[in-house]
Amino acid sequence: MEDKITLVGKDIKYLEALMIENGQSKFRAKQIYNWLYLKSVKDYDSMTDLPAATRELLKEKTQLCSISIKDKQISKDSTIKYLFEHSDGTYAEAVLMRFDNRANLTACISTQVGCPMGCTFCATAKLGFTRNLEAEEIIQQIFLIQADTGLKITNIVFMGQGEPLLNFDNLIKSIKIFREQFQIGARRITVSTCGLIPQIKKLAELDFQSTLAISLHAPNQEKRQAIMPVANKYKFDELISVLKKYTEQTGRRVTIEYVLMKGINDGIEDAKQLAIAISKLKSNVNLIVYNQNEKSEYKKPSKETIQKFKYILEASGKKVTIRLERGADIDAACGQLSSKFKNNNP
Ligand code: SF4
Image 1 (cartoon, rainbow, N blue to C red):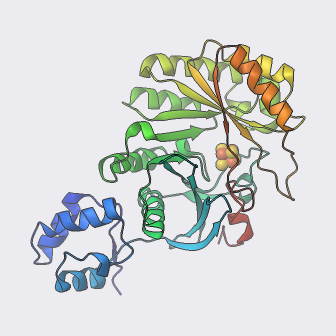
Image 2 (image 1 turned 60 degrees about the vertical axis):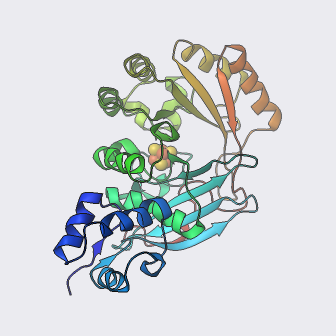
């Protein structure tokens, strides 16, 4: 049987050609396009301004997505964690976060099945690496969250499973579609990397208007190397100097992500060293409290330690935010849900 065409991820030109090829009016493409990207409906029968014959044609020849929702967990704080299954039986995750009193709806999405980077504190690292996601598979995560909730995503963070800059072309392709087709502003998109220097340089060459977040997680080379194998290849000092260049080239501030882990990187000396290391880097700091569960080998610091750490950085002139803990009662940290399903590497 001929494979069905997957619609989510296709642009207007493709949809127009598809309509014409099948004897339909060209303007049906625009209607379908709006249903896909602006309304993200669950099925063809919800595309109410299409004639029944067009809907039947779509059902026969196409499918909305090639991925599907395999599992879903809803936290008491209304964070929703999704596990998506791909057509080859692999999984990837996404999380939808809502913050009280804010209209923003942020989706954290994945770019790879598993991850090869091996960060010691990360549940995804334990899954190993299977493959890069196709751009359409990345895009469909946002579509399915919108279709499932009936809500419009306003912000996207590439902080789910995988190292986004290892899947560079599909990352850039999906950002283009999020901006142009889903109409999510470039400034509302954040890409997080563990610090791949060649790809950061490549991003600086592009007209990259989204935010770059660096998972630094340590105040110096020695500590970074102990928890992030990437530091063996790309040294701490070189990374900071490449980031400085990046901010000069792009005119954009970077975000320093720092997961606080008790007794590992949360000391007063760590905070002071970090403040010095990034003092000349145009950056904001996002402190993340380690998402501890019963299997974690690391622990989260006390509230007092977190506040002291924050204070030292603020005293050095940095803008610091503490990422609110979301989904503490579900498997909201990346990799935690996938690890419950065993066929990640079929
Ligand atoms: S923290 Fe990010 S880069 Fe490191 S192993 Fe996990 S998913 Fe990969």
